[in-house]
Length: 169
Image (cartoon, rainbow, N blue to C red; front, side, top):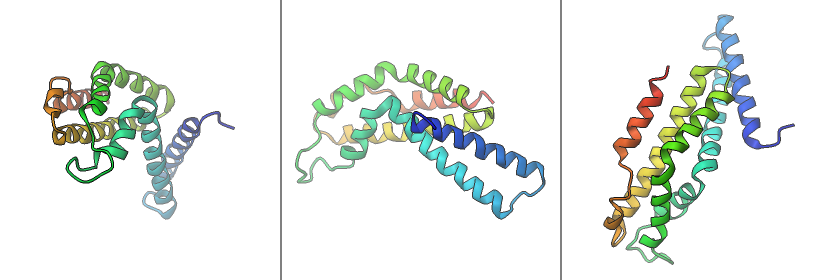
């Protein structure tokens, strides 16, 4: 029915959100049915956020999930090096703002409920900040990682963008 998993997730989120609105309007707030649909909405929102971020920041997320948690001083097979993270840092620095704008447009056009869409965007941007913070922390542990400090986007800059998009409702 759907050509991409992301489209299916959007469909489910829009419908769960609509069902919840109808249940609230009918005055059945807090019931078992509502709680089930809230949980479905929450879990599908988490899936969508991850799909959205992977679509735009796949290399960064893959690195953070597989390599950023490794201790550089431990006896792992291959320690994280500056050469390994430098392309990720430069790529992020060159396109993060534009990509956030693309994500914003994607979310606005995908969700019928503006407030729901903005909450999803806020969740995506917050998750992106968490991934980027983990990358930054990893760089601090790498020998010679301080050479990349000038390339790193400041956490406060990312926070500013999150707040900017949060103010739209």
